[in-house]
Image 1 (cartoon, helix red, strand yellow):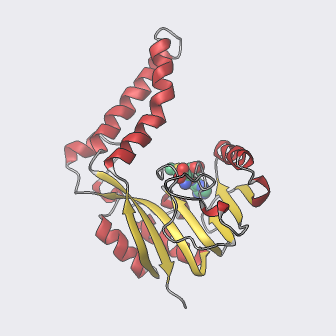
Image 2: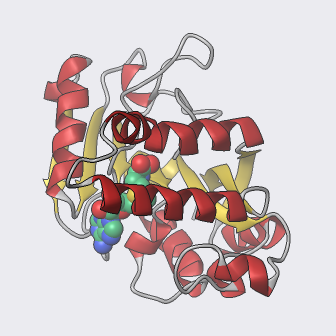
Length: 239
Ligand SMILES: C[S@@+](CC[C@H](N)C(=O)[O-])C[C@H]1O[C@@H](n2cnc3c(N)ncnc32)[C@H](O)[C@@H]1O
C-alpha cells in the first residue's frame, strides 16, 4: 500500500523492473508531487509483475494499458516463492514479503530479504514496503487486529533495517507512512462500499457488507498508530 505516486528515492534508470508480488502495485502511476514512477523513466525499461491472483494481474494489465505501458509490462500468474525471474535492476516488493517465502512470520522477513538480494542485480535497488511495530502491541490491541494477530508478526523498524543489512544491503533511504497516508489508504479502501451501503440499507447483501465494513473499521482503528509501514530503498552490497 504505497502512498499514491510513491517512488523509490533513487531509482536511477533501470532497464528491468521486477515486482514479484505485483498485485495492485502502483508502479505504473506517478504524481506531479512525487515525480514519475519507474516505468515512466527516460529509458524504456521492461517490467515483469508476478502474482498468484488473476484478478489483481488483470487490474495491473488494465492500468498498464491506460498508461500506454502495455507493451512494456508482462504480467505472469505464478508463485513468487523461489521465482526464477530476475535479476532485475529494480525489484519492488510492497506489502508482500510473505509471498517470497513459506516461512512463518516474522522469519519470512529474513528469508524474503535474502530472496530480494538474489533477485536484484548488482548496482540495482530494492524497494521494500514492509510492516513494522511502531511500539510493542498490548495483548488487548492484538486481539482487536486481524485474526490471530501476534507480537511476532512484525519486527520493529531498527531490527528490520538490521536484517536488511544482514541480508546484504545498505539502506539508501528509509521512509515510513505518515498517519495521513494511513488514513487515506484505509478510507479509500472502503469509501465506495460505504457510500453504496448508505444508499442500499435493505439490499440482500447489505447485512454482510455492513458486518465486513464494521469489522475492518474496528481492526484498522486498533492498529492505527501501532502498526507502521516502512518503505526501504535498499542498495545491494556488491559481491
Ligand atoms: C498485500 S498485497 C500487496 C500487493 C501489491 N504489492 C501492492 O502494493 O498493492 C499481497 C499480494 O501478494 C500476492 N501473493 C501472495 N502470495 C503470493 C505468492 N506466493 N506469489 C505471488 N504473489 C503472491 C497476493 O495475491 C497479493 O496480490
